[in-house]
Amino acid sequence: MSNTQTEAEIKVTEKAAEEVKNIMKENSIPDGYGLRVGVKGGGCSGLTYTLGFDLGTKEGDTVIEQNGVKLFVDGKSLFYLSGTELDFTSGLSGRGFVFNNPNAAKTCGCGESFGV
Image (cartoon, rainbow, N blue to C red; front, side, top):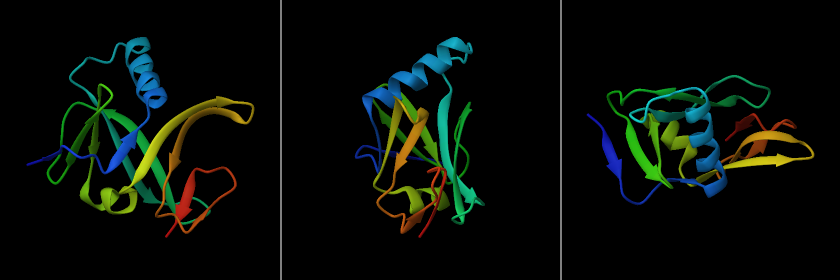
């Protein structure tokens, strides 16, 4: 059973949403898929962000729809990601998705892991 959120606990910027749509198009990922966003143990700061495409929800997932993109987030990850903004950058320091997480008490230099 999944929960659908009308007021998103994770914000997806327009730049991030466009990049997700581009990746789906370039890789022929069907429209029914969504972006699974999560966290797992690891990295130099304790927790690492995860991103991947998934066909549907799993028990306990929350579904967030923003800017034409559907996110699937499990309950444990949502606890750590609530209030986070998912953005995309293509600046001088690299190209990729960026998590602006207000819950992160510490982050590593590469920005791929965090601690609370």
